[in-house]
Image (cartoon, rainbow, N blue to C red; front, top):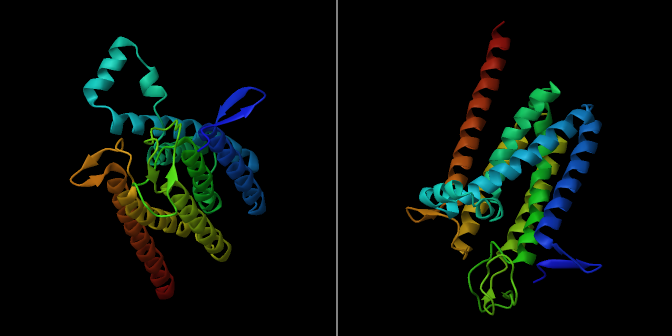
Length: 264
């Protein structure tokens, strides 16, 4: 599609541009939601900065782990060839895990309770992801299977590894649309609940399920496979299982608390 945006003779990678737009837009939206909920916006800025840093680290590390063998990674490190490890790409699940770690560290730096920000921040994650997938579409990564349908897209000079001259399913745009639907659902649920955890649990279940299904239509080989499923599908299953378990534990915890109060 359009891997680069030419501005005054300067070629700006669309993937990086969309990532920057996604982060800035989501940060602004989260900031206004934070102030509306009566939380401290300056603390969110600290948390967001750490999220960005650790999301980049996690996304790059995850890409390296699913792309290269331990021997290759060791060889790159021993010979000082850092470029393949730092410029290969970013895996969303790695960025999500890294971002979660960064959010925790940021909350410690800000000396604030991270749980108070879950319902504020989590609903905007799929919005940022939807914008980021548009960058994937422009660059030609995370593409779908070859298709004869009218939806097929043919890349001529892809920057992200898509095979040129073949009609491919624009899975990036499909996932972008799915994320927008999830964003709408979470924003609606967030406006009607006081639970600090419901939107997080719901996001993990919704996106985990969607990603597990969409992975069957992915055609890029650099994803890592184990027992017939991709790395992201195994992470999706873990995400769904963890969310369901957390939801059950929280439900029984709340139910137990109500029972104790009723007997007092």
